[in-house]
Length: 367
Image 1 (cartoon, rainbow, N blue to C red):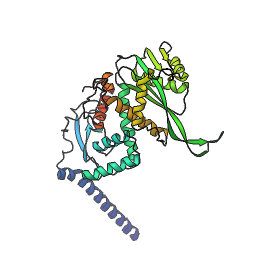
Image 2: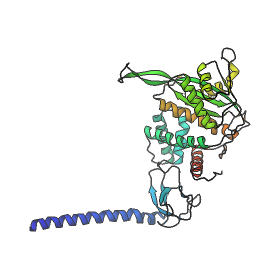
Image 3: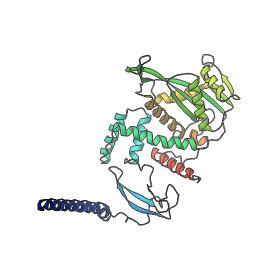
């Protein structure tokens, strides 16, 4: 009986010792860290560098307080806020789910446009981090995650933005691209080996504003793929065109007729008049000059999709055109965003993030 008491006493002492160490460590990390680094005291109203912190849910700043700091490896210390009105905890940055700084996002997206492999992009970011004196660690999968996460924000902004109806003439055409496909036996799901197959990139562009509406990636070339590309273009443009120009491919003609029965279609084969759809042919040349090289073989359709979408976003929002008097197609199409000569990816993504957040709560986004 006495032995059991001694063991229980020892266990209780060990538990008290462990609990004391954990509580002491929590107090050291949670309280003393703010005193050592001179950060803002927990529970006080926040003073952010861009102004008062605004709650993403209720869009109010009167009941927002500072609730701590998130320590990241590369981005430094990020303040965390809590809204007492709706009891929501948030960080006042669109990169709240990543620990990479803005220059990493700019560097990754800028290199991905030119078609560099993911591993090469990761090595370039590490090399620049050494020059900056930072210990930034990034791998190939992290590069892919940065691209896909930020591309989703931009696509949501584009899908909800308003395009004017200045030009009612579209051009549609497709181009092939090689990628590594899986060959399967007939009536069997067993994958044998990889082989090079062709994917088709169906592009739709507005003739007057030069706005690249959609780049639809598909494994085949038929009526269904053309119809899906036209449907996606209608979602972006939010209005049907009056005239659609294409070459002599019947799949485009039938796809347009299935969705837009009253739209005029003018189809002239390329051997008769190659300059009939010269704008979209020039677009294909621009696409080949960047990430989607003609001799490049992509590993999957997903890689081909985000590479093509990145080039399309750069073409619409970042690259000025001489035929548009130095404006971008997005500005000529009526999309309002803070464009200037040195616009970076991080600035544009931050604006798109705030614009989407305000639109969801019924507040008009302003520049």
